[in-house]
Length: 121
Length: 130
Image (cartoon, rainbow over all chains, first blue to last red; front, side, top):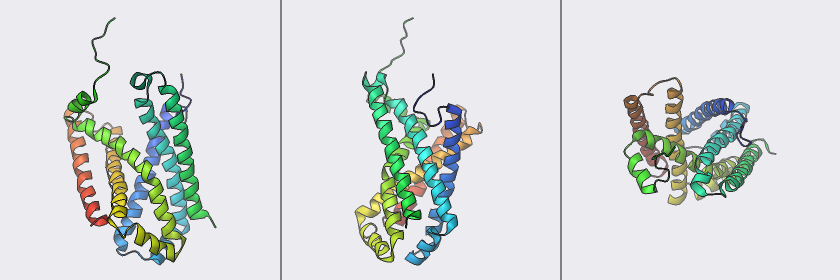
């Protein structure tokens, strides 16, 4: 039986999405932290021109979408591991679905918020 | 067929067994750090938004978030979660290639991951909080 809540309805696709998004997020993390370390005392001009150049805006959008996929697969795995009928009793399936719907809404807000920061106005 | 395998272990028993295993510790910390980072994404987005909106809001973020201990500490927690998750993720990707899948090599790899992450988290503490 296929899960109705997994990211791509396929374990193999989820596995791959988790890894591709992980690599994108890892590189993004290193780029941001690396820039901050090299910059030393950060000025608004330098930070603003770095983060709003087209390349970084596209990279940030890619990171946001990767975050969405990555956190969904990760939290889906955690919730399906621990929020089970064996651990929590009969209400677990219902509670897990509620939590997962909540997760989806939070992830949606993160993506929209991130897009508004960089692409709004 | 009756199985004697215990099903419901107390949390104390689970911790007692798993605290001895670096593999188990590396794994559960990967999960916990992921949840922490996910919950602190609003803080990071808030800082990103303020730091980019205008010169005034950039200064305000510098003042309100990075001006006091609490703000710096919250940023440090997010950074610590990211650092651990980063190294545990690299461990995971390396293991996808069939490396360190035996008992001893797996334990070594888990111990090294935790140690390396701890060093970078300590450095992050000096960088952000102090």
